[in-house]
Length: 425
Image 1: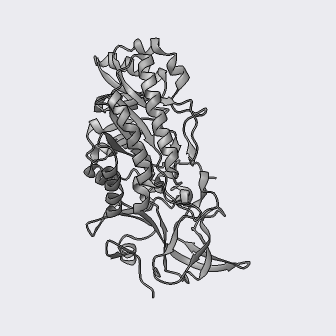
Image 2: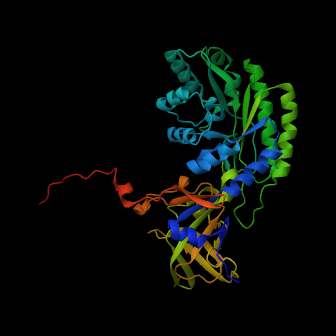
């Protein structure tokens, strides 16, 4: 029997009619459930920080902040976003390998909990800024590129040559540099090994090693260990051959590592930063079928959105040639008896949302949904390709849909361009 897909009782067809397509729909109930379940399981000394790079929408960020999440940010606009979303400065950290002087100065002005230094030169620049402003106690964390290896990551961020952080061996030999900081106070360390871990043992291993390395470095450098951000990288299963992370096992192992660490460092603030894990499950990318056609024996669904809005589902990094979960939203209850390649409207053969997708019969006007799309949708996509612009985004909270990002209009895209009055023959 056929039925439309619903979000908190609202049919997807109604959302599409009201807000148009393509459209990202975020379910606040799912956001709440994922966050609350993790918060309930984690040791109370571990704070959960939301990594805005996964989805910087102010509505998503604001809702997570209302639940108690802090924020990890990496740009000036992300700083503006979290401040408007109501995140307190004591619950914000700023990191990234290429911070500008203007960004560093704005972080100092905002009074963030800590600026994460990715090099000793950056710590030196902050020392100079603090001196210029007469600040005697500017809090920073040092990002460490550990010298242990990990496995199971979809994308390794540390443990090998990377632009991120300071090599652990270099830090061990930098006691004089750290001791020479008179106005910058090193509160502790940050390490992030990678993303999309689906094996709980890998996450527990990372946590134990990062906490041990932080203790070692603090002693070697004579630092009072006040804070450790041990990363996160919890994975989300997208593909048929994957299983979701066993969060219970992962968190139990994290807690087992945390208890003895806190006995040795009472009062130390611990931070677990997560982006994809918190946001992915809440989102559905909704597109409308424009045409259904056949080419050389292969059936195609041509929709009004694709690569330009959801590059992760199309194929970047580890996502090459594998499909996100894709459903018919118009015929949600019908048997998936047909096979289609689902594409967007762009003039490139790479604009493929899914290959050989099993769906019910698809007709022009039907809605197709790419599930688990709450993370790395618009934020990781070339929205200006062919000048289509970015789609609307809607957050459904307590049964009410809220437009949390307006769709780009033609004038929005052209407003910053300037015509040149060329001479004509």
